[in-house]
Length: 187
Image (cartoon, rainbow, N blue to C red; front, top):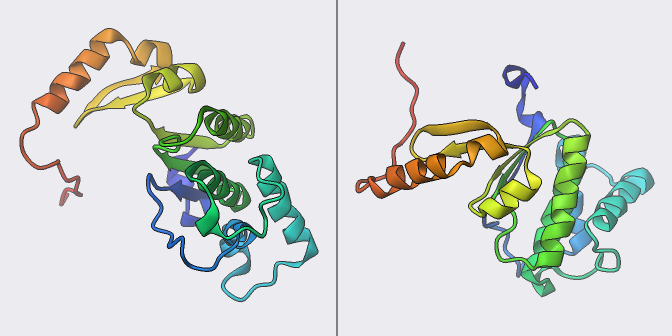
């Protein structure tokens, strides 16, 4: 993928913790349909074809039957499935996931990893921040190890060596001050 040719519409992001107010009266179908935002805008109509896509995204994450449930009644895993369904509708080239499998059960994690594999099979790039190295080894073919600087990048079995993990831990433990802030150089 040529990253220089990406626009905002080519990127979807799932933060580690969503700032969605779960007391707001949204249903699962409403929240998932928000994945169509870039396509329909604030006043666009969902219609039959788009509703079928919303239903397909909900089914793809295992939430069929939950469409009318308020998001405030969902478990953590069900909410994460809902957010993944919303991402499915965005049809982007680059998907950014920040700790997408935290605080969910093993079944939900397996189902969502299936979604990630589907994206990978479609030629999308999925960049996931993960600290569970066993999950990385089992499901992610390429790894980028960062600890204030690039430690390693490449096939997971080569990047996640004991030596690279040790170096990353040393880099993290050596950091006593505030986190480094990246900025653009004035060149």
